[in-house]
Image (cartoon, rainbow, N blue to C red; front, side, top):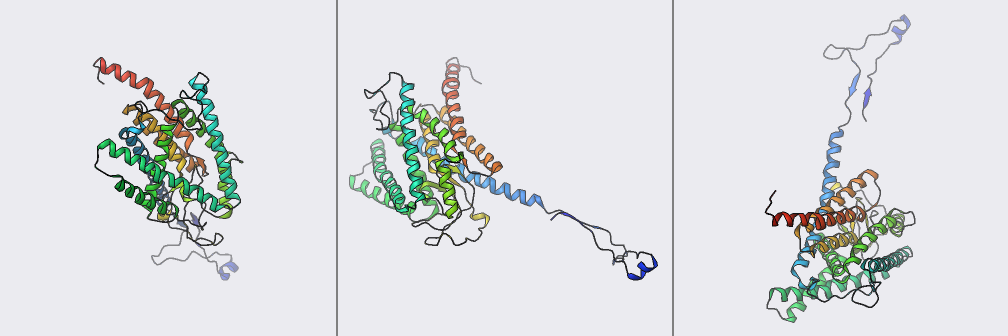
Length: 403
């Protein structure tokens, strides 16, 4: 503790009787003892340590988010399946109002709003189902649900994308070889995500799953509907995390009460998370909130057993896979516009929004939604770059004006 500690001055009984206080004892150097000023604790070291780990945590999120968005960008640019101009349009069944069906209001904005409400209602319903299953400890049902989703993405969509890449670059490869590659890739992913494996492998597969899901949304959602869904999901994220009765907040609070981690296939973690059965661990963030709390799990341990405090190097950050998906959807949609200025503007906007979210998180020290700031900043950057900066740059290039 910082403060001033006063050294004692002895007064003997004899001097007290004579009414004379005794002079302070002299030190070895012949000087009187004076009040000793205790130097305050070195707060600079603590601040530097916080800054170090704070910057480390920021990079732990910026790097994987950037990698996921880069995967989506190059997939859009390389794989012809995602070319919305030359390929026939097929939309998800959840978006019935589009120009490919007879169900349309005649206005693309009205169709987009109706489709957004349908998709948002489906998201809310499925989130509530997930919360109820978790609340009543139906862990096997949740595990089966997530396992089936990973199975479809890692096998079916990997096969489709690999086939398109082989056709795009005219590789000499038969279907048996493609099947073996897809089988090994999918099995390794299922083991790493839903059981255990090296941390870097688990993180890589989570990023690939997020990128594949983002590509599905980009290809199978109408353009106007996609933008309205991005805005609607960002607003819903605020309600789900910050509202006292929000489903994601209930999920986090339930996990904290039970001292259990959320399923690792729902969140990206910079620390190892192995769970077949629910294992001990510090509370971690849920599907969308950011949380820089430490996390550790030991398979098969009872949840009630106290967990020893971890070293700072073992602390990690958590970000929901839904955040990776919708970040990549925004940047991937910008990549379909065939303008690298728009792509880079949205890319930078997502990272700026993420840093602002982490800054607010450090101030308020509570779980926050990661989507709203990044999504709204990204949409603003997209509109300004696509409809203002790009036409200006094109006109300057035609007029041979260089800045």
